Length: 472
Image (cartoon, rainbow, N blue to C red):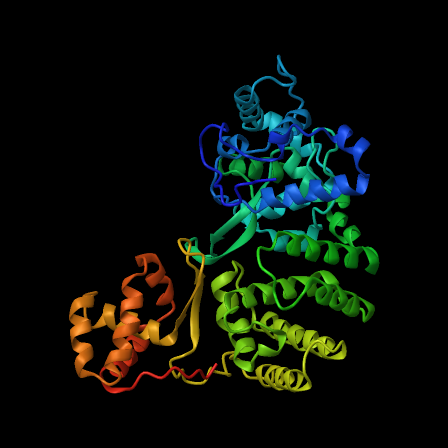
């Protein structure tokens, strides 16, 4: 199956949309030819691919509906009691128009919300109270995953808490890079979004409805047994790995074992998975450094608990939450060592670093990287034209900072000056590599540098030799 995994939810027609509907698949036909288990597997795979498409956190209801797969749009019509004339529920345009009219009517929206199961209404309150969108992991942590919801919602409606909201077109899921301050970030993550044009209506409707005892108790009933929590955590982790486009050094069997391990010791596996997911996201940003589990260093853990969570996640992290994340990494590596997945030296270094970071100091950036020598990798990409991997080091980054800070982006003048500086020929050779790069790649390479880095780079360019050694 081919999908456009980076399509955005934009205004416009649906004519060029490519999804499982294009195959004219029928759930009953599939069931007759394949096992029910295989149907559920592919249904969840298609659903996960749909959820990996880019979404705008302030999208309109019309935009969201225009990009829904056909079977989900039919399910929304069913859930909202629409019986349009023509083929099934009429044309796509008619379905979208009717759903927009229905869901932007306060009376109809009040009926829709009143009919929600209590736990689904509680989840909707959470998203609306959060400003209309939030990180999906935060929502599934409290209200459960969507595993098993499948694809054929018009014939087999989703059964999860969030699936109840999505089937009614009250909630949409996709990926964004929007950070807590509203600005684009550097990493994509999944979010749950209520369309902006019904947020105010929902706020009014929900404020009129008292929180009944059943709704208040809905969250508590989600995890009445440790088995329920463990199944939700493992299901969430497997969904995460199914959607990955890369293979992390921490494989899925490592994670499943760790979740069972913490559950057997009375800890919440759902919270443990939340921490492991953050750790995996961190590894993805440092994959040029952490290519095996034994590559993790103390300064990585310090960066994870300090700068990374601040840059990558919406909520404000407390000191205790950061320490809990550090403790989780320590427990994870203890378990990995027990299973023979990491060396004793690695386990000991992780233990020592974690103990230092939670020793009572208020700052968690205590463990700093060694000063770079120059050969440290800072960026790797596959050239789309040649298909070859390109690796850029701290030396490349330094030269880009000198080019921007001292030569006002004038490569010609900078090349001429190379004849007068230490290791001028080597620096000149790297400059020629940088000249061939697109501007956007250059921006990425120097995106995390500050003013002091620029000053040090300029001093290095004029006074120091170029080294290919690496301290990281």
